[in-house]
Length: 115
Length: 113
Image (cartoon, rainbow over all chains, first blue to last red; front, top):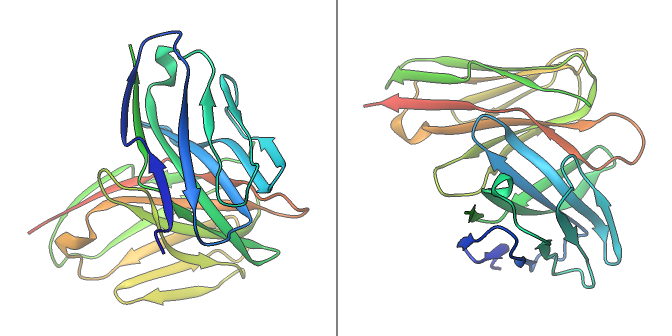
């Protein structure tokens, strides 16, 4: 299994450009999430999905869209890039051990710079 | 918003020393996880603790969940350079079907040879 894969690994955008960060998992996990990681801020949840066709907002959703048409794929779209979206983006997939615990498997990340 | 405070934020020690990292909150969590992240990579899950007072050991790492399920600690015995990394705790909200994890800001550990 490849686990969670993310593309691209690095990306530079100009302010106002749009782009899609790709995320795929081959573990048949039901749950998928997008996080951003900024220095001194830890990991913050952007959007998440509890199954195909179902998405919801996390802590910092503004400026981002997601969709989940298949179990495997969970792309993150930046609608109009801003310098404040410069960050490292991580996609994660998860399954439920029980009703109380969801262990997350993270991708290698996409480092995005917006100039 | 539930917050997780990690301390210390930075820790630099010599090989062979022991250390403890703390993760504290005023909120109750149904479960708590610890991750380690190395530069340029995504976090990797180390352990999940679910029961108040639970202690789990992973080789030289000992994880404890507080009795009230509001705090946790990670103790490393005889640290090695390979333990270097960012240690993150993450809590799952208590009750309901809330899947979202809340992450602490992390403890950056450097173990010098």
